[in-house]
Image 1 (cartoon, rainbow, N blue to C red):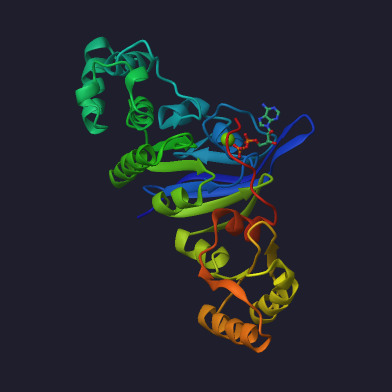
Image 2 (cartoon, rainbow, N blue to C red):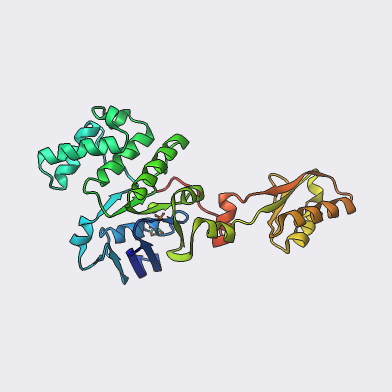
Length: 319
Ligand SMILES: Nc1ncnc2c1ncn2[C@@H]1O[C@H](COP(=O)(O)OP(=O)(O)O)[C@@H](O)[C@H]1O
Ligand SMILES: [Mg+2]
């Protein structure tokens, strides 16, 4: 039977005049992967730091692996692993030496640290690179070494802060496969991301966070249904027609039409895509307007966030 491994209620955290968390709730069942999805500055890292006992909070309560984060920090620390936004491995040591060092930090004796290092190198597909320095690794390999380092004590709960930010597509896929493997072996995973596709690919449940608050919590499928309506899009042949096309899109979509001046297009989310497309095509013909393109498309990540949180996501590349 599933038990709740991470539970937080009404978390509040201020940094001087910035409210980082404003009554945030989260709950994660054991053996599942929860994604904290939100734009930069939403409060994801703050949440992870609180749940991993690295940061005090002002209000609310949180428990991880059955222990109170504030009162039993030491018990919590024994049961969790953390991979932060910055890499923790030393570029001058080999992969194996890095893992042995981490083992010793976790108080394994030398023989056990070496044994554990070799197990992890195997498990994370790094056995062939064991004697190489991480500075010669691809981004994906380096991240896998980071993940291996946080798995020394086979933690019940693994926290990953933006595990694939900065990686190329191949590196992202490698990390996704590794994390899926850990989850399949029963590790509970809490990860943060600002990539919708990552949350979709990896998570059993997604908690959307913005301005330190819960915006939505659902399965990826449920979430996409909520924010992921198909969009009807018409590209004008002549920008002069944009206002007329906008009225058409508004009429068939029941409002919500947005004009993109750069691409000379109008689009809106639609509930009945085929009906909306047919109605729009008929209206365009009736009004004898010339269009360059008319069709249906999936929302972009930015549009999905926009529908949900009501403002554009910031560009990546901060903290
Ligand atoms: N140590 C800090 N001092 C001051 N403000 C901070 C500190 N850490 C985070 N913040 C602020 O708290 C908010 C949430 O930050 P963070 O949790 O890092 O967001 P995310 O990880 O979702 O990008 C942001 O406005 C950020 O600037
Ligand atoms: Mg962050």
